[in-house]
Length: 195
Image 1 (cartoon, rainbow, N blue to C red):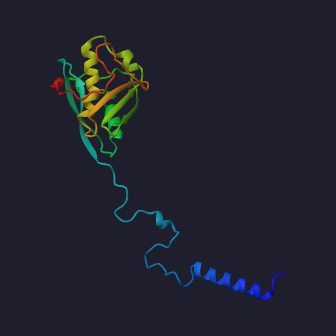
Image 2: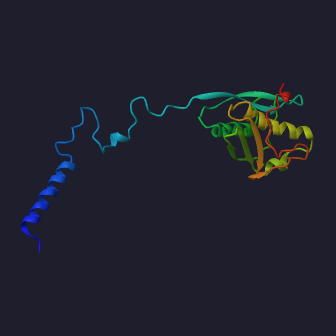
């Protein structure tokens, strides 16, 4: 049986602890205009911290020239995202859409899909395409060279974080597209193909 004196002492100690922890006079009231702790205002960005709209970045896509065995450039705009992988996806999506001018030809045949782009910390981008890329490339060596370097140059010459580009097909290493180029290693840009 609990003695009445012990019970009173426990109740007094508990009451004192609750008064010290429960936000009595020990906590200052929030200043005028300052949100109370635990309110929705805590999750609101501070003035000037709101998400800023993304700017645009001018880039150059490299397409096979319609009049020579070179690459020709077309200017485009992409969103200037902080992620090199996101910028690479935008560039390759625009490359897949094809050129806007009559002086350039498609770099990649219609029906080819971009599956994913990965950019490593070492500056190597891996562009993963659907199997249509390998099946739809013409048989000539120059067709293969211009297709490969349209992809490589469009990434490596526009995104400073990318030094080399590897081409994958359905997530797997691609030895070659049509038997003329060794694609087992990532390639740097080839400025010699540009007009």
